[in-house]
Amino acid sequence: MLVVTVALIIYFALASSNFLDSTNLTTWLSEDAAPIMIIAVGEVLLLICGEIDLSVGFVYTFSPFVLHYLIDFYGFPGILALLVCLVMGLVVGWINAFLTVTVGLPSFITTLGTGFVLLGLVNTTSHAEPAQVPQTVVGIGHWIGNNGWSEFIWGVILVAIFHVILTRTRWGLHTVAVGGNLLGAQESGIKVKRIKYGNFMVTGLLGAFVGLQVAFQNNTIDPTAGGYTPMFYAVTAAVIGGTAMLGGVGTILGAFLGSVVLATLTDGFQIIGISANPLDIIFGGAILVAMIANVQLAKLREAGRS
Amino acid sequence: MTTTTPEGAASAAPAGDDILRVEHVSKRYGAVTALTDVSMHLGRGEVLGLLGDNGAGKSTLLKILCGFQPPTTGRILLEGQEIAFKGVDHARSLGIDAVYQDLALVNQLSVYHNMFLNRERVNGPLLNNRAMRKLAREHLDEMGIKIPSVNVEVAKLSGGQRQAIAVARSVYSNPKILLLDEPLAAMGVKEGSIILELVRQLKEQGDVSIIIIAHNYGQVLEVCDRVNLIQHGEITYDKRSAETSVTELTEMVVAEYRKALEERQRLGQHPHISS
Image (cartoon, rainbow over all chains, first blue to last red; front, side, top):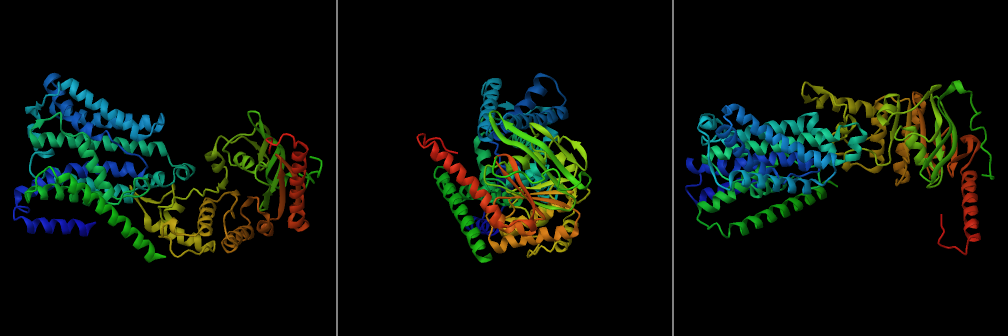
């Protein structure tokens, strides 16, 4: 994975002298890679414990609108409004978990439904019109997502924190156990439901945070931002980074590299002047090649061992 | 039940010596009677083989003993005290631990993480992997379980090694009673011998009483002190291992089978009625 990432970066650096200049670095890593990376952190946790969240991209869409409504219509102080946005993410995560874990719907269906509801909420309340970022939070916005590197720095910090949580804490170990052997985890007395609730809520929280970041970055609140695209990119980043769709296996660092690879492809092809239209063909092909390579490598490793 | 009378199901040993007694336990699921009337006992440090064909009621009895479900009637006495289990956790806290056929191991985790699953050693918020590795190694060595390394994923181990790890994990919490559900199922002779050796060791140490549930009694018989046969939801046979033989047990089961077959032939005009 690391080899693929480095190879791609070298390729684009050689193909275009602009790829590694400072303007493009922030576009590439902060604007393209960071949102995928942060959402992917949540998706990795969920995929490992055997679930998925398709709604997180709509939490991303909705959260800056919540900020706008609270400040401009209800006179909330900036910090409080930002906190409420994050709480909104947690609440959506909780609802996803409730419907999945307690009611018993498959998370694919649950989050498909809640995603649509959120999109409807965005369009109904905003009349599908973009809005201005409220003046009172523009200052603090620099720390969140409007200062060149800030999104990427947040991404790296969150990746580091959740990497430690996944690999070095009981929470992470139990997340793997729940996805690896649900019955076994239950028999060991692990609070399976609590693990799933927690991971859904973390994912919602991260989605809300990314939505705010992107709004600050673009200095506008866009009803067409977010949605399925960043969510699918995040799941793709997780999967090409080695996370299994069936649960029990996955790493945050893999998803980090996966998100850098995806962003490198998007940004790199743009910068060497390939039109956006055929980009998805290359993209889809790259994903398939990466996955085939992963599967083959795993087989080789398996063969080498036995 | 006319073939055999239970030989001293409730009288073989004085009550005071028993760690576990089951008295007239029955279990019905709606119209289906899974256990008719089971009385049995387990001595301190004893290894009891609970044998029976598929569908005889072994699994039902196991589920009652490990607290997974309550009996319909009858009572259970643990160290002379009547007890009603509130659940598996409750039974476990009282010292009854079951090693299930499905093993409850997480294939994707290392041996030592499995050994300490949900009772991890921690340093503040972080896992103390070094301590767990060391303790797991020591514990497995002590029990004579040979695996290449405690760091390997459980998925990479053989069936016998995994079963051994599962037993070792249960033993680590110092249970008074260990219930082993089909510990030799789907295992070769060599693999199975790992488990039998483990049971023998536990017996020598004498801290734990064991019930081995099995339908393949050939191998199991050699480590059991005593054998109970369960047929149609009742204990139909209770003898010390020394006084029985595989041949005798087989004959009993075959006789049972033959009777069922004759019964079916008698009802031959209704071939769709099967057992």
